[in-house]
Length: 407
Image (cartoon, rainbow, N blue to C red; front, top):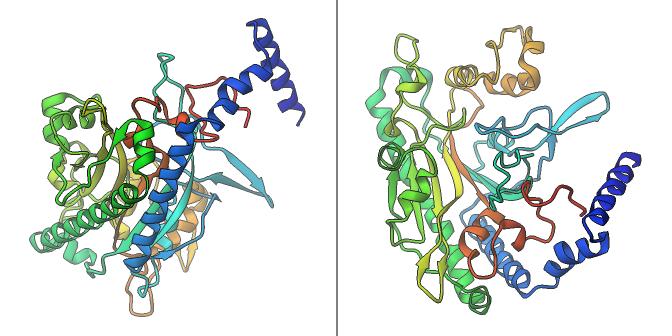
């Protein structure tokens, strides 16, 4: 506690030097927000949205699983974060959760499980804006409803390599199933908010349109060609008269499916050669509708997901290509002989490699996604009353907001 006390002492001194006080800072930045009508309305809408999503997922037959807040391994992510916090316990270093993707995979080993969902803890120590700008949309710890469903197609590595046309047809069907599932989830949430929180929407100066299936779909290759790389998803959405839309086929995480990736002769296509039609992942973007003017705010990505890599060989090669591991696992009679070279991935990859008594892998074929709770609320509610993501949270920690977080 000594270091915390010293940091707080210096922070208070800096406030005093600037002509204010700790009490005034807390009043302006925290207490005023806690007492505000805007936060009250945002919390009311949040409660409805989360409850509706949970009810939808349970009604679809998915099981709720426990949070995993620390583990020897976490999602490495494709974007930069400052670092991954580490907790030492019982002689073992554990990292805090970036997302529960690996936990979801392992929890789907049981073939009787249709799918699962969890209020996933996420700690991502995002780097501050290099331009010292308030970006508004980031939180270093946030809530995400993580979802994963089994596909149960039974595609093995030989079929993967040699029956490309048949596998593509199966993947196309599963992609449509994923899109339909998450569209219906969004519709369930929006319908509940419209039925319960119209006064709260009015108080925030925004409106919701009940979405209809299908949502518009955009391919990342095409929007990058039209709008460039920077904020391409948001720019493309400006031309759509729809509150929600899809962006499909964006190169991202190591577990998002690329197909075909390993060729029949065992060689790999270079990652630079893949098109959106070969990348089976997806984002849902959403934008706020200003009630008075009937104008749209810029869109934000609120849900990301994919059909997942499911076979041992592509999983290993993707991890190597993404520089997450430096060498392939080597097993001898159940012993992972190069476990030290694999960092925290040794236990996970051991489970990925395991097979039952019939030689069938335990690792499941799945698709899934995660919807950010605060990110979704910010995308739909910002405008007249809510200007940055901190405004709709009691204790949101935006890396661009304060030099120190007091609560």
